[in-house]
Image (cartoon, rainbow, N blue to C red):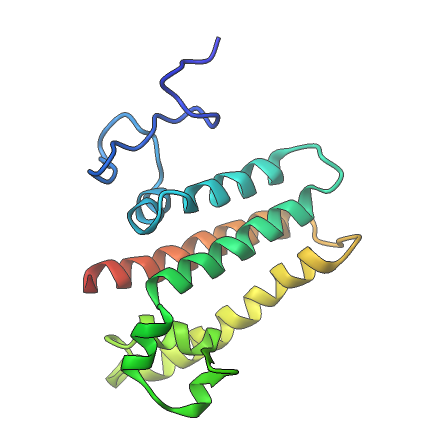
Length: 174
Protein backbone atom coordinates (compact mmCIF):
# COMPACT_ATOMS: atom_id res chain seq x y z
CA UNK A 1 0.00 0.00 0.00
CA UNK A 2 1.30 3.44 -0.93
CA UNK A 3 2.08 5.90 1.86
CA UNK A 4 -0.71 8.54 1.57
CA UNK A 5 1.80 11.27 2.45
CA UNK A 6 3.89 10.52 -0.66
CA UNK A 7 3.13 11.63 -4.19
CA UNK A 8 2.74 9.27 -7.12
CA UNK A 9 6.52 9.24 -7.52
CA UNK A 10 7.18 8.00 -3.96
CA UNK A 11 8.36 11.39 -2.74
CA UNK A 12 7.03 13.46 0.11
CA UNK A 13 5.48 16.73 -1.06
CA UNK A 14 7.49 19.90 -0.63
CA UNK A 15 6.62 21.91 2.48
CA UNK A 16 4.24 24.69 1.46
CA UNK A 17 5.81 28.12 1.31
CA UNK A 18 9.18 26.98 2.58
CA UNK A 19 10.86 25.53 -0.48
CA UNK A 20 12.46 22.14 -0.10
CA UNK A 21 14.69 20.99 2.67
CA UNK A 22 17.68 19.36 0.91
CA UNK A 23 18.52 17.31 3.98
CA UNK A 24 14.92 16.41 4.80
CA UNK A 25 12.92 13.31 3.94
CA UNK A 26 11.68 14.53 0.57
CA UNK A 27 14.17 12.57 -1.52
CA UNK A 28 14.00 15.32 -4.15
CA UNK A 29 17.02 15.99 -6.33
CA UNK A 30 18.73 19.38 -6.48
CA UNK A 31 17.05 20.02 -9.84
CA UNK A 32 13.63 19.30 -8.35
CA UNK A 33 14.39 21.69 -5.49
CA UNK A 34 15.39 24.44 -7.92
CA UNK A 35 12.36 23.84 -10.13
CA UNK A 36 10.12 23.99 -7.07
CA UNK A 37 11.62 27.39 -6.20
CA UNK A 38 10.57 28.71 -9.62
CA UNK A 39 7.19 27.00 -9.88
CA UNK A 40 6.19 23.75 -8.13
CA UNK A 41 4.28 22.60 -11.23
CA UNK A 42 7.57 22.37 -13.16
CA UNK A 43 8.53 19.30 -11.14
CA UNK A 44 5.58 17.46 -12.70
CA UNK A 45 7.10 17.88 -16.15
CA UNK A 46 10.49 16.58 -14.98
CA UNK A 47 9.00 13.62 -13.14
CA UNK A 48 6.56 12.93 -15.99
CA UNK A 49 9.41 12.87 -18.48
CA UNK A 50 11.34 10.49 -16.26
CA UNK A 51 8.29 8.26 -15.81
CA UNK A 52 7.70 8.23 -19.59
CA UNK A 53 11.32 7.28 -20.23
CA UNK A 54 11.07 4.33 -17.84
CA UNK A 55 7.71 3.12 -19.10
CA UNK A 56 6.95 0.43 -21.63
CA UNK A 57 4.54 2.70 -23.50
CA UNK A 58 5.12 2.41 -27.24
CA UNK A 59 4.97 6.24 -27.49
CA UNK A 60 7.26 6.83 -24.51
CA UNK A 61 10.03 8.59 -26.44
CA UNK A 62 7.68 11.27 -27.74
CA UNK A 63 6.20 11.72 -24.25
CA UNK A 64 9.69 11.98 -22.75
CA UNK A 65 11.01 14.47 -25.28
CA UNK A 66 7.83 16.56 -25.16
CA UNK A 67 7.88 16.74 -21.36
CA UNK A 68 11.52 17.83 -21.23
CA UNK A 69 11.16 20.26 -24.11
CA UNK A 70 8.18 21.89 -22.40
CA UNK A 71 10.01 21.88 -19.06
CA UNK A 72 12.94 23.74 -20.61
CA UNK A 73 10.66 26.29 -22.26
CA UNK A 74 8.52 26.99 -19.20
CA UNK A 75 11.57 27.19 -16.93
CA UNK A 76 13.53 29.56 -19.13
CA UNK A 77 10.51 31.80 -19.73
CA UNK A 78 9.95 31.94 -15.96
CA UNK A 79 13.51 32.96 -15.12
CA UNK A 80 14.00 35.22 -18.15
CA UNK A 81 10.63 36.93 -18.57
CA UNK A 82 9.73 39.08 -21.54
CA UNK A 83 9.51 42.18 -19.34
CA UNK A 84 12.90 41.58 -17.70
CA UNK A 85 14.53 41.07 -21.08
CA UNK A 86 12.92 44.22 -22.51
CA UNK A 87 14.36 46.18 -19.59
CA UNK A 88 17.77 44.58 -20.24
CA UNK A 89 18.01 45.04 -24.02
CA UNK A 90 16.34 46.76 -26.93
CA UNK A 91 18.62 45.21 -29.55
CA UNK A 92 16.26 44.14 -32.37
CA UNK A 93 18.36 41.03 -33.03
CA UNK A 94 17.32 39.76 -29.60
CA UNK A 95 13.66 39.60 -30.61
CA UNK A 96 11.50 37.80 -33.14
CA UNK A 97 7.96 39.08 -33.69
CA UNK A 98 8.35 41.23 -30.58
CA UNK A 99 9.28 38.30 -28.31
CA UNK A 100 12.74 37.45 -26.97
CA UNK A 101 14.46 34.59 -28.78
CA UNK A 102 15.64 31.48 -26.96
CA UNK A 103 19.22 32.70 -27.47
CA UNK A 104 18.34 36.02 -25.85
CA UNK A 105 16.71 34.31 -22.87
CA UNK A 106 19.87 32.26 -22.30
CA UNK A 107 22.10 35.32 -22.65
CA UNK A 108 19.87 37.18 -20.19
CA UNK A 109 20.18 34.44 -17.58
CA UNK A 110 23.97 34.36 -18.09
CA UNK A 111 24.45 38.14 -18.24
CA UNK A 112 26.31 38.31 -14.92
CA UNK A 113 28.92 35.76 -16.01
CA UNK A 114 29.09 36.70 -19.70
CA UNK A 115 32.24 38.83 -19.57
CA UNK A 116 36.00 38.46 -19.44
CA UNK A 117 37.20 34.86 -19.63
CA UNK A 118 33.61 33.54 -19.74
CA UNK A 119 32.49 35.41 -22.88
CA UNK A 120 33.58 32.81 -25.41
CA UNK A 121 32.38 29.95 -23.18
CA UNK A 122 28.90 31.48 -22.78
CA UNK A 123 28.55 32.01 -26.54
CA UNK A 124 29.58 28.42 -27.30
CA UNK A 125 27.43 27.04 -24.49
CA UNK A 126 24.39 28.95 -25.74
CA UNK A 127 25.00 27.55 -29.25
CA UNK A 128 25.40 24.02 -27.86
CA UNK A 129 22.25 24.35 -25.75
CA UNK A 130 20.19 25.50 -28.71
CA UNK A 131 21.53 22.65 -30.82
CA UNK A 132 20.77 20.22 -27.97
CA UNK A 133 17.17 21.46 -27.84
CA UNK A 134 16.76 20.51 -31.49
CA UNK A 135 17.02 16.86 -30.40
CA UNK A 136 13.90 17.33 -28.29
CA UNK A 137 12.04 18.95 -31.18
CA UNK A 138 13.02 15.98 -33.34
CA UNK A 139 11.86 13.52 -30.68
CA UNK A 140 8.58 15.34 -30.32
CA UNK A 141 7.74 15.58 -34.01
CA UNK A 142 9.10 12.29 -35.37
CA UNK A 143 6.55 9.49 -35.49
CA UNK A 144 9.26 6.87 -35.13
CA UNK A 145 12.39 7.80 -33.19
CA UNK A 146 15.82 6.35 -33.80
CA UNK A 147 17.22 7.43 -30.40
CA UNK A 148 18.95 4.61 -28.55
CA UNK A 149 18.44 3.98 -24.84
CA UNK A 150 21.91 5.40 -24.14
CA UNK A 151 21.09 8.52 -26.13
CA UNK A 152 17.82 9.00 -24.25
CA UNK A 153 19.60 8.68 -20.90
CA UNK A 154 22.26 11.12 -22.13
CA UNK A 155 19.53 13.56 -23.15
CA UNK A 156 17.99 13.35 -19.69
CA UNK A 157 21.37 13.83 -18.00
CA UNK A 158 22.27 16.79 -20.20
CA UNK A 159 18.87 18.42 -19.67
CA UNK A 160 19.27 18.06 -15.93
CA UNK A 161 22.75 19.62 -16.07
CA UNK A 162 21.60 22.43 -18.37
CA UNK A 163 18.62 23.34 -16.21
CA UNK A 164 20.66 23.14 -13.01
CA UNK A 165 23.32 25.42 -14.51
CA UNK A 166 20.75 28.03 -15.54
CA UNK A 167 18.73 27.79 -12.33
CA UNK A 168 21.80 28.07 -10.09
CA UNK A 169 22.86 31.24 -11.93
CA UNK A 170 19.32 32.63 -11.65
CA UNK A 171 19.04 31.74 -7.97
CA UNK A 172 22.29 33.52 -7.11
CA UNK A 173 20.92 36.67 -8.70
CA UNK A 174 17.45 36.62 -7.18
